[in-house]
Image (cartoon, rainbow, N blue to C red; front, side):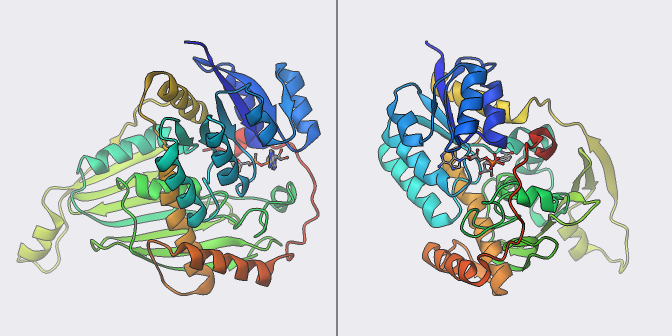
Length: 388
Ligand SMILES: NC(=O)c1ccc[n+]([C@@H]2O[C@H](COP(=O)([O-])OP(=O)(O)OC[C@H]3O[C@@H](n4cnc5c(N)ncnc54)[C@H](O)[C@@H]3O)[C@@H](O)[C@H]2O)c1
């Protein structure tokens, strides 16, 4: 089989990174680049000796590509994805798949109705992280028994004012559609359902604050409580303004607790069921007998390239997608619910009402639009420093 010809649409920090490793993927090569900024389009076209386009529709019509990676600002992801399907191309979209659930659902419905013969993936590279793969394996394998709590203290997404000034679209309602929940947290939001086998809460309450630590018009600090229909409780705390940040994820269950921190997994295994001990013990105050062990994660690799290679293999040999595009809506459900609950200070039930969420975004744009006071100052980002 001929090597797959890849186009990258949006060649900024993230897209440029994809462009530079594509020729080293097995069974694929870079065939074209596209960016609305002529300088970026030319830079990568010259560097890799491939044609460049200033408009995604021209790239799609050029017949130079079999598949595209979409790495533009988020709002364009659903439109470009659907245009690429219509042109008969496979799509690997950067996260988030869309800014709001309604747009994501439209893409999914269209894909299922007309384009299932094409591959559709989303760049959730954290799914290839060896620690997270092991955690999922333990939870899905029932190691903790029935889960009672998930808590993620995730405050290590530190971003400076210079970061927000590096792109006019960043941290605006019109350009990005949100802040920390839309840009930094899509991976965490995806993990919070992927680690649980797709389980989402039925209700979210939250406190989110706009411009707590940066002169931007979107949220940069969030604390959320997630209620699940089976009684499990979840907590998610994040910010881009705290240093040094913490990153600690805990799961508590009937047979113990998992703590994930600093790239290590610690399992605290109770000898007996916690529920049984609660109900049957004759003692008022007891230490629940627990064994502690440290678990070695499975082997990993280069995260983004792993997802792209798997996407290539899915197209060429039918390998199962690690991160199917259809899954993108799940973390977005959670993110949209937390955003709306946090900024309106009112509980939100899932599934999120797509029309209500779009109306909420309009309200936020009217209330905060234009309040980002940072002057745009383009910067060449070190993408490796932003990844996890
Ligand atoms: N998976 C990850 O770890 C990860 C990390 C960083 C960014 N991202 C995602 O990648 C996307 C881009 O982020 P970034 O940091 O590279 O931003 P960026 O601003 O550095 O790059 C965006 C590029 O898209 C171009 N562009 C804008 N509109 C376009 C259009 N309609 N058609 C073609 N090109 C267009 C811009 O000129 C710019 O070069 C975001 O959605 C972000 O969430 C993912």
